[in-house]
Amino acid sequence: MSTDDESFHPLGQEWETELEGMLDETEYDSDLGMQMAQDAMRVTKGELSEAEFHEKYHDDVMDEFGVDDRPTEAAYDQAQEESSGAMGRMLSAFDGDGEESRRDVMKKMGVGAAAVGLGAWGTVDDSQPSLGISQEGDNDEGDGDFQWGMAIDLERCDGCLSCVEACAEENNLDQGVNWMYVLEYDEPRAGTPETSRNRLVRPCQHCTDAPCEKVCPTTARHTRDSDGLVLTDYDVCIGCRYCQVACPYGVNYFQWDEPDITTDEIAEQADDMGMDGDHMVDERERWVDSRAPRGTMSKCTMCPTRQDGLSGDDRVGTTACQEACPPDAINFGNMHDETSDPQVYASNPSRGRTLSLLSVGEEFAESLEEDLDGEDDDLESVLEATDLDEDTLGLLLATEITAESEMGAGDGTIADYEQDVMSTLEVLSDHGLDLESEEVLSELGLADAPDPEEDGLGDEDENGDDEEEENGDDENGDDEEEAETDSFIQDDEDEEEDDEDDEEEDEDEFDGPDVEAAQNLLEAFAGVPSSNFRLLEDMGTNPNVIYLGNEPGPNAEQREPTGTGVDYENISYQRADGERVELVDNRKDVLDEKTVGDTGLNLGGW
Image (spheres, rainbow, N blue to C red):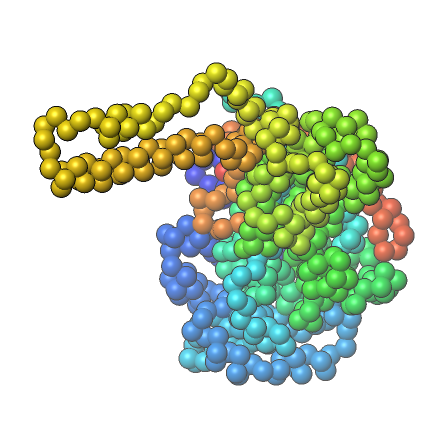
């Protein structure tokens, strides 16, 4: 992510050089992989069209892989029709556990593991689309109203690595495969708020326009139509590692060795946990979840097994990392729904933080009812009888006052917190405390104090002049018509004066809580993030992770060791075989074979 060199890769020249060396160790064309990655990023930036990109590399991809299944809309219908089930029947004739023999056969057949999802890209030399497999469920078009994503509050993250641990444990990852990664960085710059840490939490961004997907010759890397998750079909991946080069965020891992945990152990664990599935295949019967088999690419998946309801309905809309985060720094949900956790949190982080920090819980409302039984209903009596104080009650009310949508309307954790707040306030209202009164709100700092009544100001005789005018003699000898006209004019003037009096009375009426004061209360309690950003937003990848906190600048460099306050090696996770494994910050410390590690990143491009 350097701006000082001529690297095309946002992670900088050192990263690019390491990636190129990594490709040199594969059986595939290194130059082709590097060039395609560079142009895939040009496509997301709008500098190159999808059609130009496909045409530019079609022949080279065909020569290298014997197939070019990169999806194009023009080829979709024809590919779907012609590829129906043929390859699946051919592959079913071969024995194997679904990890090695299947991919070997596909490579030998020259179809690069066949097509996924959208079918084939373009046309091949004989003007026929390249062969692809369309599995059941792949052709659901999706309505575009759903996109899983996250809002991550970097200032709430305490670097405990619970998210990294939970991800590794849930997915039975090998040591050093950190789909979720937390790092701190150094950056010499002035004016950085002391409350804002230079910390970054890095899952896959699940980009709406993912460069990694554009370079995959077999479409193993694909976007799931139903919810926008960018996934890898392990049955289809041939391990060319082009996706690793094209990813601007450095989130991909290559599975060098046979995984430590077998598929049988994963399936047995899923069965023991009562899952409706094996925690490997999703609702489309595609192998996209849990650790990868040898020779394939893997990355953060945002837990498709959970999202499909195969881990239980209560886990839909959750991820392992989000569920494990003690300070609620990770908010997961539908990015296209304004009531979802990430959108509600990102729209007002101070409010989201307050809801999390207070988290009164259902039991609190129940205890309030008991505490208030037989007590008076004024504010002072209520506070004396309960565990509430003015500050806490003010914050609870402030979260309600500043709500931009209906409280509790969503399906996530924040909606649960809102429901708890509503229950608490309802108990107080039912007891008789008027939470909408000017007196109570002003006492809590949520409205201006009422002005003292002005005494000694008697009502003026507004009609005095009129009476004098009516009783006076007609000194000028006006006729009856003129007198009648004067009467009409005076009536109009009286009506205008009455309207002005009504307006003055309306101005004196209490118009409810002060929204600005409520927001100030939340900000004073929970703080305000230094910025709201998405990584590499200017590249056009449309990442679906929103960050709140310090955005890495052009001179940011990862701190070594990670510097989170908790060392990776001090955290362990348990896998399906019952063994506990230490986390590792840098996978190079685990593998003899060279692979791209996680340390020493130049974060300037982020």
